[in-house]
Image (cartoon, rainbow, N blue to C red; front, side, top):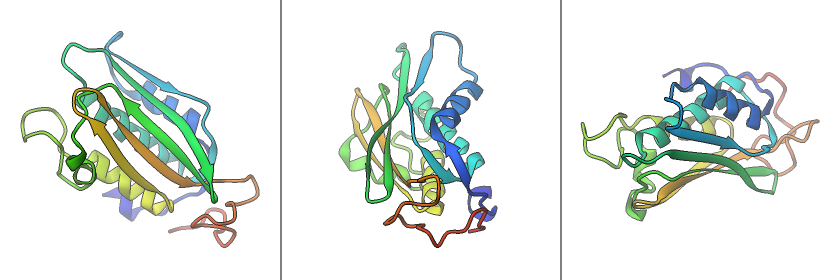
Length: 178
């Protein structure tokens, strides 16, 4: 997959703009879904991979929506600490039980039976790979019938470099290839 083989092009990325662009690129009939991105921080990342990250998360929400219900997906910043930003991507879809939280982040481990719904179980695994390549992480939590939330962690960009304490602090050079 390109997620693991292409070199990264690090630059300041406005996550709010990227999330909105990813949502706008989805072909969803009017009235079936809404995607909301609050004001999000700027991080130093590969912009194409950040857009892919949000596309995978939004597609996962679409694949997991409750039949007949309008999907609501939301991205918000929930904290900053120790050189990292924490984002939450949540939806009002089908959700999943606590036992599935780690499993669904692995390849081909969707929480539903094969053929039951769209999606092959790779999107969330690719999200994990993208975040790992950026020095970040992802975790999941869900409530059956009430939705899911994914907590993303990424190194924060201060405008002059990575903040002290982040995985890619001052040693990371602009436009570095990882």
